[in-house]
Length: 250
Length: 235
Image 1: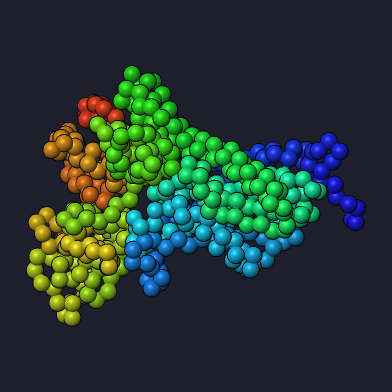
Image 2: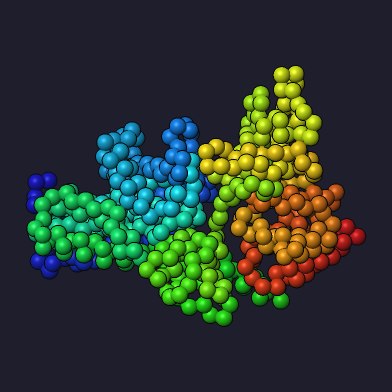
C-alpha cells in the first residue's frame, strides 16, 4: 500500500467529501450512564466517546485533597477495540498526556472553590477513534459536568484544525491526522471567548496558524450549539411529557 | 433572553441570562454587566435579583440543619454517616445518645449499625474537617421502619412550604409520619403501605414541580384522588 493518498482532490474535496471548512456531523446525548452523576456520549463522524463524571465526592487518599477547592481528576482512555490494531488496555504515555491536557482544558471553567476538600472524577473513554478524540473528549466531558450539576463559568468545546496537502482545514479525521502536515487541537469557552487548550503538532506560517485557529474557533462555536441543544433537549423533554400528561388527565 | 410573563427559561452553564443593572443571585455570576448562569436550571428574576433554580443540586452541610443520614461504617469511637452530600459526616459516640456510652465496655454497633437511618443535626462544619453530627437532641436518633425518599436539596424549602404549609398539608391528608431532612432525604412511615406509596408519589411531584404555582392545591387533589382509589380497592 505505497500509493500516495490524495487528501485533497481536484475539486478541493477531502477524503470524506467535505470542504475545507466543513465539520463532521456531531451528535451528543446527555445522561446515558445511570451510575455516573453526569454523563454524555458524543459521536463526531466515526469518533465515538463516552464521558462520565463522578462528584463532587470525598477524595481517597485524604492527603490528595486541597483545603480550599475541589481536586479535578481526569482519565482519558482508549478502549482496546477503538482502533484498527488492538490497543493494549494499559495506559500509554499518550493517554497519560491527554488525561492531563483534557483536565487542564476543563479546569479553568469549573468553580472548584465551591467544594473544598472534595474531588471531581472525569472519565473519557474512547469507543471508536477516528481523529479528534481529545477535542471530542473535552466537548463530551463538559456536557457531562453540566449534567452532573457541577457549577461552571462556561461550557468548554473542543475542535481541531490543521493542514493537509497544503490546505488549512477544520476537524481532521484519522487519515488526515496521520498523513497530513499539521494538527492544531483547540478547546474554547464560547461565552467568555477564552481558549483553554491550544496545541500544534507540525509547522505553520503565522498566516496559516491564524487561519487554522479561526477555523477551529468557528468549529467550536458550531459544536457549542449541539451541546446546548442536547442539554436543553433532555430537560425540555420531561417538561413536555409532564404538560401532556397533565392535559390528558383533565 | 427574555422572561415571558412568569414562565422561566431553561439555561445552561455560561449562558447569559440578562444584561444591565441586575444583581447576581444563586447559581449565577456577574461579569461586565452581564449575569451568567453557572448551572443547568430555570432562570428566575425577582426584582433586580437574578437566580437559577438548578436541575441537580448538592447538599452542603450547614450548622443547625436537621438531616437524615445512613450509617456506612463505624470505628470503636464513631460512626461514618452518609448525609447525601459531597462530604461524609462523622457521629461521635459522645454525641450519639442523650446518655453517655462507654465504647470500651460495649460494642457501639448495638446502637447504630451499618445501614441504619438516623435523624441528626449538623453540630460542626468548618473548612478543615468532615462535618460532625449530633443525634442526642429531642426527636433525634434512629429511624425505625418506614422508607426513605430522596429529593433534590434545592426543593426542600418548597417541600416544607411557607410556615410549613406544604408539609403540614401532606401530614394531615396522608395521615403518615413524614420527616424532611435539609439534605433532601424524606422519611415516611405509616401502618398502611398503600398510604406510604401514595406519599412517595406526592413527594416526588413536589420535587419535580417545585417551581410551579398552585402546587399545594394540586398535590392535595392528587392525594385525595389517591385515597379514594385506596378506599375503593380495600372495600
